[in-house]
Length: 324
Length: 245
Image (cartoon, rainbow over all chains, first blue to last red; front, side, top):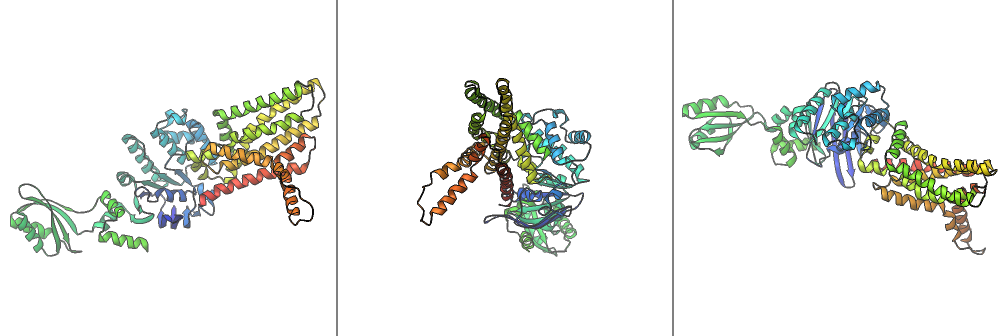
């Protein structure tokens, strides 16, 4: 389990990480999402004891990383942004070194072999690391983090530099690891976080701007009461009819296609169900609803909204919460 | 510590640095030995040992320049500093690895002593004392070199800083020598005298050379061992400080 309490890191006047708190439970894969320079790597470096924090606490399995670093680090496997590889060693030598460095007690040969087959580097086992491709270096970095079977895995952009097939493999692997490890994974690739993580912490300019599951995030930011529909019918008449519906606050026409087909965005009052009425009225009016969907945002929209500082009410609320 | 030590030793010999260091040391020692002892038929090795101080001032920066700077540059320090090992163990591991390579270089002087003993009857006590002294002063220099390497990410900069630092600590007494001698009576005469004494007492060169005169003084042994401990400790502090800044 990882617990971060009011963590801050200042570099002079710059607040790289500003009072963030979150926790990751056992067996959870937590996605750390944010644009470049948001403070993801800094937070991870603090969690692993590479740098210290200015204030706040980071607990790894209940042990404070600053107070008992050696004990806390025993439970961490860390893959930094740039894999920390000694290029003059072979993969085998390197993993043996890491095994010794971590004072690992598991049976050496079989443990390392398991890891190598897990991340699929067995066939480059005796090659010099400097001669490996970026994808393989990344995997060796991941293997290094797995040595000693630590409870907590902290992976900073683990799929950078991999080809699409490898990305899928690594994601599957992380999912698998997530079953018996606590995993924190940072990324700015949305589909990755979506595919792998149970929960998402969105961080921007050093602050946590959201911390929830993807569905909840999407739900919170858009609510239940916005719909997008495509209707075949005279635009003005359709707009008028929609506005007559009890509970409709606003209606916009977003796009006009050919043959009177338009796309409308409808905002309803909180808690009002307007869809039945909409359907009935359109039918009576002789217009056809071609498509009706809830205007929930996908992760990409959420991300952009949260990090671009777009002025939307839901967003402002979130910022206020984060400030508190 | 063991893991770091083994990796470092291996890396000295998978890169040319270890070989270059040992070869240069052997070559210089060989040259001095043939000039001072073989050519002149002299069984004492004191002049060999005193001239070796010069070469270790030049060579030790080469040996230690990459110890920490290279880790920082390639970001491999992230692997060391996030592993369940203390900073002290990491720095000591690196120190002993460099010291081992250095000791291999120094071992050639024992061979030379054996060569001398074939032709004459050298004073073994003095020779053993000199070898111990050379190891001690080298150890202190290595600790200074590692300390200098912790300041920068650039190997060359690290080597130059250590070179200057080693020249400085070796010839502190010469700096004391150029301080003006003044008549009694001035209030600052005592200050300058005190400074001169302090510089002489902390001069690594002065303390090392006293061994080559055949004086085995335990306070000098303690001095070098303390210097090793002090500079390794300072290195740990530099690494620690970087985490906090």
